Length: 158
Image (cartoon, rainbow, N blue to C red; front, side, top):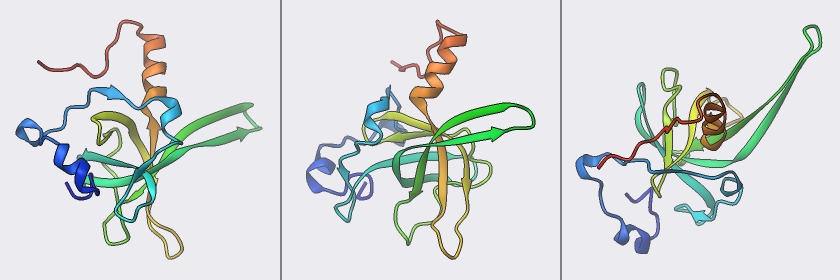
């Protein structure tokens, strides 16, 4: 609770979900990712996120804006761009946000919205923090709905 809602006022408004499971009810829209204005425990603006992965269980992290990676394979004529969200551990004291086996896990924010889906990561080195990469869910949802127009990917349970 203290990590997800560092300021006391927001924490007081939070209602713990029935059974301890947070139901994801919406998607973080494209324009909201780079403009995160939620302060963390240090007062820095970020998007605080949570996931429950098969390998690492429930972890909390700090998401940055969307990054894109361009790949050119001249031999085969392939040019592709992928969009990814970089997610870092909540603090230097916390462990990695994800590990091998967590791929495909949904990532949510404090407003019960789907932020992204884990696609990979890069472990901690002497000169860098551990980082997890996630595909923005608005992009995943858009791609799936092109192929399956009547799909609904996050049903709300009664």
